[in-house]
Image (cartoon, rainbow, N blue to C red; front, side, top):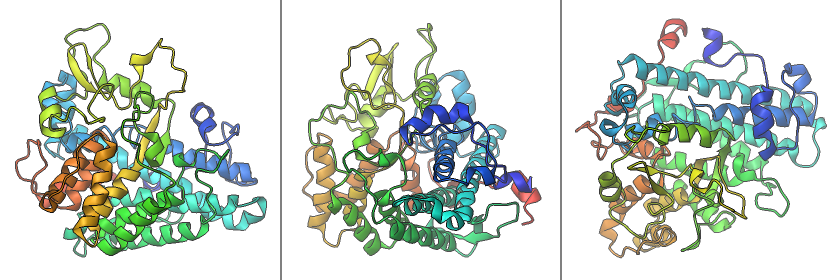
Length: 470
């Protein structure tokens, strides 16, 4: 168990996963199995190892479901669980009620822990080998791969902290997760909330220095929005500084990304039919050619049954009233983002099955898993701007992009930001982290009438407590 919990496993690249997903990242043909000394004998091998870490993140126990539209979105009250299928009610009611004692819920949490540390183990293997093999790399590839690995390590650790540790407001001096920097079976001692955030920022600062030549958006370059790039690094710094309550640094980092103008908000009125996750706005996304099929199985009613509810389902009254506020012009709520299927109004952000058989001349931007958006940087800037006029300006740019009217009263600012998180990150998991950051006493539409601080903290897996030596 000591070996498994931090992913102490041989570096094995599974061809069945990689061959399909790799095409979007690199023009490589990974081998079905490769040991470390073989894998790290070439620049291509390091690339393949990096892709392997991204692929691991797309699994169901990670960002392929539970940490996006699955468990975290249930906890953020995105769904109407009582109206879902009988199976969904059985599995999702404990999640919605933060009942950590239920076996099925604990099973989800344990898998998340193992999944995240497996990803960390993969990037640590890269980092332990890359400096000694620097001569293998051409151009800026050494700097980019090492920067990506450092940034991804920070990203995954920070999400583990946001799950298994208290909010920064309630941090105290308790120790909640290990910040693992070694590939191996040695135990890493647990760290405090402050120690984890500082270590994540240290990794990101090093990544930022390495990635100054990142050619994101350059003509003919690969799609670097599906890898940790320089703007994703700065965006994650802003996210962490905001979590820590350091508004000055959060604003500065958010403004750097916004002012760079490399990744921009959609222009008002731009068609969303072929780009429903707004991939053009992603600072960082994952790609998996299995993602849409999995989402279909969870969001669509059972084939052939007219009365079968989807697994994840939200009542139309809740969607139009409570979450989107009856905004007929909001492009995040209008068709095709929400579509009626067999009597159910379902979120359609990840689905394109309505276009099957339709002659679409432009390729559909499907199978992207949003991890960080430029809109979040605008929200961070609005929340941390040094004056209210500037703050309104940042928020109103997002509202205009989404088809909504500007707000003029600064007294409404924080309330509008909260509403925007619910709409913008609906079925993406980030709304839960918003409530947790603020230690909110109430999650809107949740059956839990008053949140206690301990409800925001996931319990450690039993195996970790039994075999971790802590």
